[in-house]
Image (cartoon, rainbow, N blue to C red; front, side, top):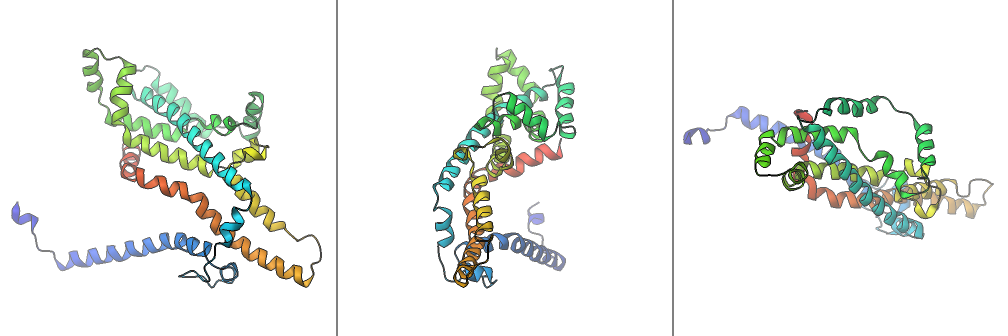
Length: 303
């Protein structure tokens, strides 16, 4: 055994490891460079960015892009709105998905198969945008935070992943032993199942959180009060406003120069907006990274 642990590496092993290292390095560069380019472009002179001069390092470092983004209070307000919508939305999602998934994972629940089939059916058959809008309107959710949260309270794919996690991780013998000690279903769920479900909870937290944070289409449909706009919708409006500035009449030479400057600044703002909207996800991801692979593999490979 001791000798097997110290087997001499062959030339083929070295070549194989070298090739894999080179391939993974190239893949890393392909994936990482766009993010690096966005970062350096957000700090570079807008004219240099628009002219394609920014490639490997920032040129004429400036914060003009960030200053333009935060000039209006709507961006800060949208940022706070998105934080609120994401926090409340994730709480609702977890509060619905985890108990539902656990209930459907129980073999002693007689309706688990038909109810699971009903959920899966909704992945293939949908009423469409107009019927959904009418339901939201008739239930009084229009122009409220709940219009962005309640219609998607349970993600079927996430429910299936969580159900598979409970099926493969929580053995039925554990429930039987708990019953012998006088533990009921509710107590078993909160005191035994939940402490053992950190991995899948972290995965659902990340999936739902990123979904809420990046969502803007639902707000575009259901929210009309700008004071309630999320960040993504505010950023979209800012870019659209910049794209139509000074374009409805013949421009003087001075106005043309100003327009070119604004167009260059608009390109720079795009990168600044990407960085601003990505900060919360970049902060959260390291805390759930250790659970990510475990949770995804259990839910996908054994499902």
